[in-house]
Amino acid sequence: MKKLLALLLGIAMLLSFTACFDDWDDDDYDDYGDNGDDDYSYDEGNADSAESFINKIKSDYSIILQDNGNYLSSSRGRHYMNEIEHALSLFSPAFIKKLVTEVAEFGDDIYLILDVSETGEETGLIEWDDNGLIISLYYERDPEDCGIDVATLAHELGHAVHFIIEEFIGEEQSEIEITAFNGSFSYVGDTYDFDWDEAIHATTFAYDYGMSEYYEDISTIFEYLASKPDEMYTRFIDPNNEPLLLKTQYIREITYMYISSDCFLLFAPLYNAEEYLR
Ligand SMILES: [Zn+2]
Image (cartoon, rainbow, N blue to C red; front, side, top):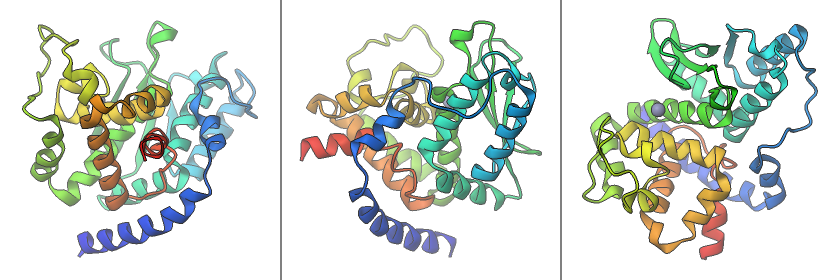
């Protein structure tokens, strides 16, 4: 029953989406397309602004943000707030709230935790444990390699979206359908003996990490749509990269169908490419 409802809802949303997309123009996209500092009302390095940001994320997105390392109050606090809100706003408040609702079906909340990683090597992680669906963004020693950024948050949200889609389609079926776009390629696991520069990478995957395993294949596409929209657009309009275009179109379709079509801004590089190719 839930599946049928979701399907009907998906169709209704696709219909309403068509109207909504007509009103959307490149200027809207440009606001999100660069990584420059946006105008932001939060002060730097201030516990009050950190607290008001945490409250805003709760009210706009229904996500519980925990700043374990007090990074939001640091001198780079405003930068981190921009990165977090940039990623969430590409998915959109309505979409994230729908995702939270889906996770709530399992009795859980979504937490976004800012912390240091145990290994000191990861930038982000998503786990579904007894406490809820936990997305961790890790602060690393090097600010250049810090996971409190658009790319890492979009990547982990991509995993969350995929978890929910699997609940509807089933793990096996979703893997069959998505890996079909990769032709005869099989994931290489953690091996670093693999030649990452092999031609298939650019034609079929967002970047090499997506070739390691099926879950990363999908998440790296969400990550690059959010963090490298211009690069994705350029690759989509190249006919050689049709497998990547088709795979991303399919991911968009199931995301809309099983969660919500409110995240159309995230898929802007794809829409722009489709417009160009038309
Ligand atoms: Zn991942």
